[in-house]
Length: 284
Length: 164
Ligand SMILES: Cc1cc2nc3c(=O)[nH]c(=O)nc-3n(C[C@H](O)[C@H](O)[C@H](O)COP(=O)(O)OP(=O)(O)OC[C@H]3O[C@@H](n4cnc5c(N)ncnc54)[C@H](O)[C@@H]3O)c2cc1C
Ligand code: FES
Ligand code: FES
Image 1: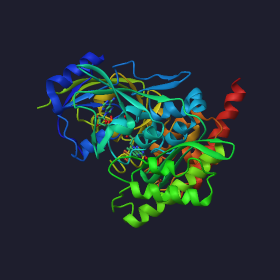
Image 2: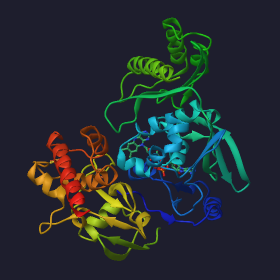
Image 3: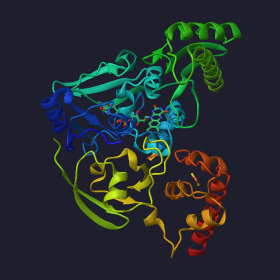
């Protein structure tokens, strides 16, 4: 499996990256860890006449845990997330999710920026970032702009990012309460059959806020506001859980594929969401 | 269309320089250009780990990296870990504990395990299974691979203590 020929660029700074993107338009693509892009190039499903390797650009590999927000550079890898103690303290759902992505070799290479920019519905971090209400920073020749994760995904491999923009960082408001990332997969290292990210807060026995996002159950991640609304103000009794799952099932639109028929996907989505809510609640 | 590029690698301590197309995958550079055939091609689709090498302290599937991406870096393959005259404790343990049958997955397994034991010198069975999840074996059923890694960990820790 040999990819089609391409020109390789390894710019030393962002200006260099933007210059190649400007010159070659959609014939150019950036590469971070390459663990989604290279397999696609080998299968000749991605044609990249100009490949821009981001590894020398710098300034995108930091994790900053502040008092109100967390900023994660686009080149931070899944392995970096797992190893970062302050991050695990401030937003443990990130580590819990990263541990369920791929396998050790892939996690050394796969980056946060690549995972959220890719636009593959199977990627775990887009839904996670929607749950956490993250904001993506996009840099282009006209400067930087911010797009909410919840507004970023349009369809499979279609996002709000323009061809000549680079995603440089993800900013997350410091989460509070209980959390869970629950993922059903066929085998270790696989993409999700269904996954749920839940972040929940309570006051006494009453749920006060909740964010729920689902992965690989539509051609984009699904932030289900309705699934959350069904829980707020309740004590998470069985009726509330059932209502939440039903609301989520209304929002997703899974496809029949090698991970199973639609009815099975919906069944698994319901089981996974219920587990995620219960686990998050037990930690709230 | 694409021009050949000047690529520099340090492989198992030896500097290598050559011209190659950017689309050349590192696994082919190692096996076909440099004749370093320890790293195997099992799946060629980033799943099996038979092609695992160590690059700048990371376990990497060499079928999923272009040689040009690794330019300027150090690559370690099974050949750089130990050989027939001086087996690495992991190689010794795989031999002793039947950690291999056909041996196809073994170079990748051992290369990955060297890194795992650097990160977690005395792993539990669960940590071994999780840390080796990127390496697939069709023969052993994994039991003896786990045993081999545990035995090597014990051996290496004892040797380290003795040295201190
Ligand atoms: C065997 C295997 C199993 C996997 N399992 C999972 C899994 O369970 N869950 C999961 O989420 N992922 C999984 N992955 C994917 C892996 O996590 C990828 O590495 C990740 O999705 C993409 O990150 P990357 O840095 O490798 O991106 P790349 O492959 O370099 O890039 C992916 C895409 O994003 C674009 N891109 C990259 N960085 C930027 C940037 N900074 N700005 C703009 N665009 C950018 C590229 O142009 C490309 O289109 C798996 C991969 C493999 C090989
Ligand atoms: S040959 Fe590289 S992972 Fe299988
Ligand atoms: S020993 Fe045969 S594949 Fe592992």
